Length: 307
Image (cartoon, rainbow, N blue to C red; front, side, top):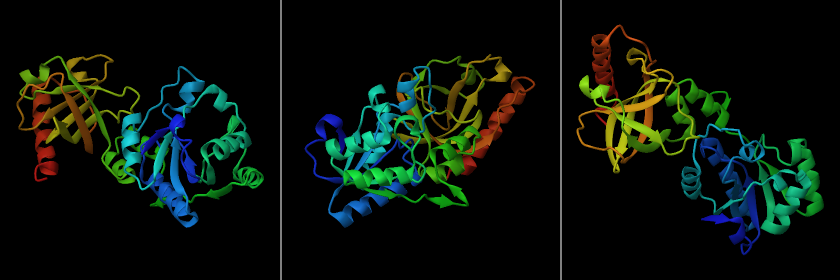
């Protein structure tokens, strides 16, 4: 259940953790399990405390995060977890000025946190200058148990939002998906484009993302699953500047949906990344471009056609 700070006060004592939970990836779900196990042992409810807006956006108005999940997706993913509640705590400049001890006092007195499970690398409080030993000392003073969660590692890597962001920025969507535990996606509205693809025999749907702060993976051509009106299709997605067509600096996100012919302008569309096929490149004319598009389509069909 998703709660706001104003509806939270009626809840019973809890075991909780706090964080941005960007992406709600497998590392986050590993942390959530530890919170739920702690709550069960102690007869408490389990609570995840997160923020509706990235804290750095509150502190720096010009900061533009590259999110793995917008708020609605984050809420949906957290609601699917085994935790009893998720609380949206507004991050304000006043909150940012609290010391770690003051913040823990707020959690204990206002939000009934009896056990605080802290992510392996998480720091909080003004200037984030204090560490886990300090939190334990404050917890003793406040009557709050403080527990350090262990990280989830795989292939010698600690699964984190930063790791996944870096993989997506490199176009390594298969590996990013493995650490996320689901297929990374972008969604939005189909908008008018230049309609060049239609003349080439490869009509494309141009996507305007609904969350402008969500990270767009590295430029290139991708095999993707496409959902329009909830119906699944396969497609080849191009992210880039269309150098063969002299598109300039504008970044386009356009998908050719294979074996599909319908008017979907202004409809909602969701695109799930499966694999990056190749980088973007400039071709010596439209004939060469069309030949490559045919090859890309065959590749996507081999990868996804039997699904």
